[in-house]
Image (cartoon, rainbow, N blue to C red):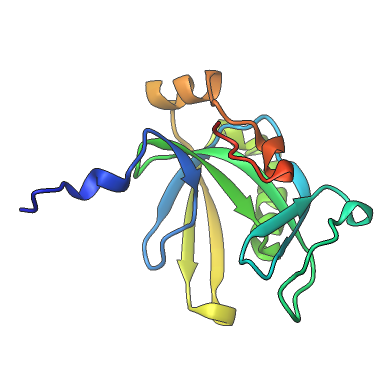
Length: 162
């Protein structure tokens, strides 16, 4: 056993959700709606987000990159027990979530959990979303009532949890 616990880097709230590879990741979307925009990485390895291509900031971007569409929403991550921001840039994930949420058997993603599976590496990475019928836990209910996230701060380069 280590002197410093393994949980030292965990926070009660905050951070970005990135599905772990090779195991199911269970989350509940707690945002009423996502923010939608564009993201491109700068030469300083920082994401620059903007709502419309005509508003693209004039900064130096990584060579060979172009803006990617993204949606961002607040999620409750069951593994960490925290609220996180999930920024999706993968078209397959966005399309799957769109399809599930339009299905009358599922509807708005606040109504069910999502199991996110990630496989592969680099350009071979793929994702699947599986909706799971589940009752709201008290923790998720609390998170939905008080998410403490301002997703529009992403466009200002600020911490959405501040």
